[in-house]
Image (cartoon, rainbow, N blue to C red; front, side):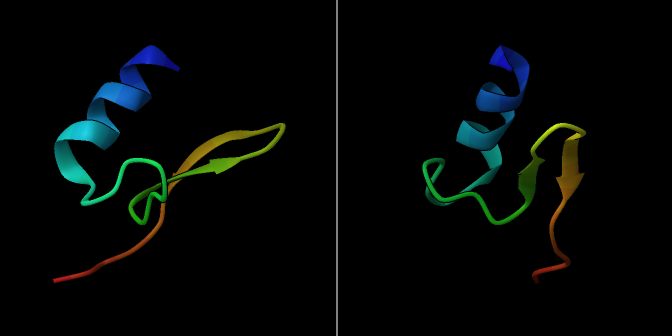
Length: 36
């Protein structure tokens, strides 16, 4: 979880409302988009 949070801080515009790295409850994480 710490590593994901660090990635979110680096690549997301707002780490509290992620658009790219999304949490899938009970499974893990998924890449959430192909924004340009």
